[in-house]
Image (tube, rainbow, N blue to C red; front, side):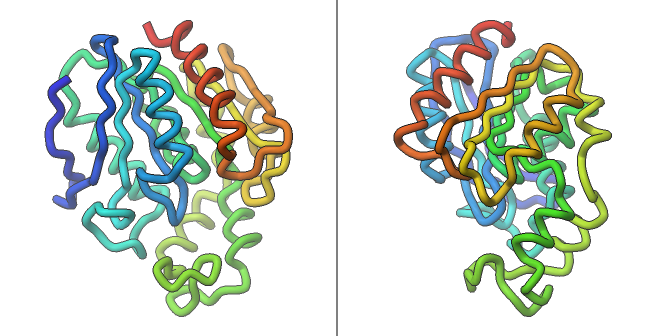
Length: 242
């Protein structure tokens, strides 16, 4: 598959990594969570596992993250959703896209899939739905534009980010508008995005859908659970990405 250089509507270059596969006219796009990037171990393991099953995969760092251009302080769900739409705009015609997002990257997927028919299959990995509650729970002790996310100096907590999370509130309206096959995976030991987000989103979502609770897995899963994640996602794609 011949892929272009990806830039968003602001001209910021998006850093990507492509994993070739044997399947034609299909692509799995993988998006990361807040403070993450395309090289997070979960995304690498999933892309390598799916590519070994024939699925071409594209890992992307949203603008302001990893080696992508842009300012981290502007990296909100709203902006990253536009990054994803801009990436879809640049793909070759006729490519059927599955999107797999982790954490806030899953919220990006829901936001886009709710109104964009170019996403044919959706996968949420420890997916965030209650955005305002997450922001308050995880970052409520930090002062926007002065403090940091999880005390990481490289990840300043911006007023832009907090305002966006509060403005969204939650994504249950968008969840109900997703009309494509949707796979939810969530670890039972996740203390960052609570598993109730996936349970309640699953109850709200339309069919076809599947929810898999991975016993003992934390927010980013782990080497023990990666094979199960790959198997579940790969099996879902086999049935639904045609």
